[in-house]
Amino acid sequence: MTTTTDSTSASSVLTSLQKTTSTTDSSTGTAGSALGKDAFLQLLVTQMQNQNPLDPQDNSEFVSQLAQFSSLESMQTLNDSVSTILSSYQSSQALQASSLVGHSVTVTGTTADVDTSKGLTGSVNLTDSSTSNTIGVYSSDGTLVRTLDMGTQSAGTYSFTWDGKDGDGNTVDSGTYTFKAVATVNDTSTVMTTNLPNTVNSVTMATTSGGEMTLNLATGTSVGLSSVQTIGI
Image (tube, rainbow, N blue to C red):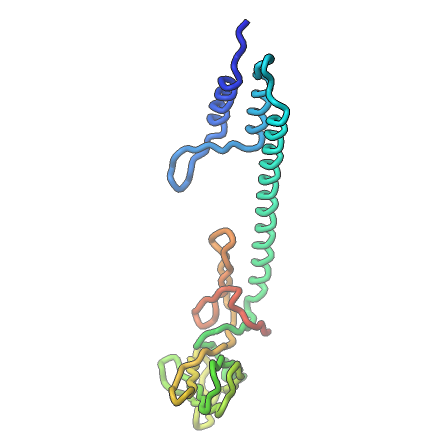
């Protein structure tokens, strides 16, 4: 009586499984194989069925293979769980971002869409104490509209307010304005970072898994959701 060897049977099953689970790599266009826990279990059963009855598989080796199978199953279950969590997070992030449309958010930048009848309140990140601090307000064509003298300031973040008027006290037209903060630190004029409010016009969804939502502002610029410092009405 002829007995099929363990290695021959396992090889045959593996070849068959590779054909039935063949996939195509989208990036290379080449065929590959994806063997999951079911294929692993089928190989294990085939190995047990075709082992040499005069020299059966050692118990410790069998237990070791069962442990590998259990580990593989746990890893796949974990991957499925992580994918589900990621999907839920992205849905939650999309809902959160879409609720910001039409609202004002404060982000780091130099331009803001200003309703001059209401004015604007922003802030400046000062890296060191300064004896002289000014904020230049420029129109969209680059014309200096107003210079705000903020005097002496300590290191840190300080707030400023523009009432929407020019140097002569006239209310200017609403629109996009640029704010340039300059501080004199150690007798050197240095441009500082400004944080300005802007209205969110729309939201761009992430194009890659785990990517960040993008907020499209009224000034025509875009920022990531994580860049938002404060949310207004």
